[in-house]
Image 1 (cartoon, rainbow, N blue to C red):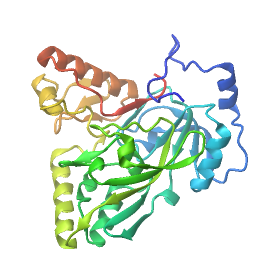
Image 2 (spheres, rainbow, N blue to C red):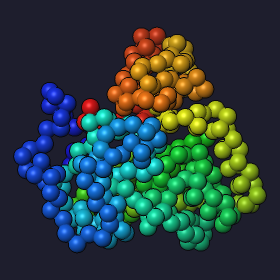
Image 3 (cartoon, rainbow, N blue to C red):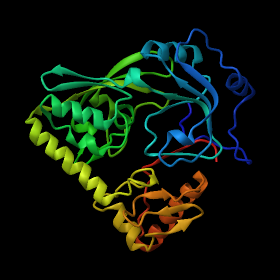
Image 4 (spheres, rainbow, N blue to C red):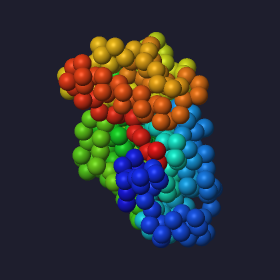
Length: 321
């Protein structure tokens, strides 16, 4: 299974599908699915940057059984990528080869299992998870209020905010593998590191269990409000952005390195480094994904020249240039 964002490209920027893959991409050999399957589906409206091309195919499964059936029939013939809220993501202008899987309402439920454990669907937002925890008197999950994504995404990427990350609270997760098999993986098997897990590309997280502790709903709510206000005060949330652009290097802050390199407000086409928070890129109105990714690379070059630090992308970049 290919890794989204890292496919080798032909000289013209197209994906190097074989004749077999191209045939499959044109006519998916799947039957009996109950969800929505769309060919050449525009993705720009589904991501925060509001830019980028179409998916060869977009599949919105009816439920976990429908997803398993679909992937089993697909049998690894095309790359598969899960899409959540599209916050930390650049969809390149040439679109995404293969299949994009988007989890809808059937995967967005959150339930209190008792013993301060929440079971959360892969499509549930961080806001819904933290709010459900508050109402149940479960503390320790407030930081999820500050992650602009869904459970599937931040379980895969070990999402974090305000001093905590998913590896601190995850018990285990249910994952539909590229061959359609569903397995339960304990947190230790994901071998978490900073914004990284070993979850295979093409695997889709459909649910997860998070462990909290007993807490006072009023105090939990106050902490969530503090986090929400801190984000509002420091991040360009009213703009078309993608969240934190670069990983913080060990012992440092990415935004400080970007600022010190003179990149605050730097522009390329319709893309700009945020004046409010320099680790955020924004689409000022008509930016292409090439503008946004190109600006990120320009910032990396300037930071490397100024401080010698090679910033690593935190935003995932997928698809054909």
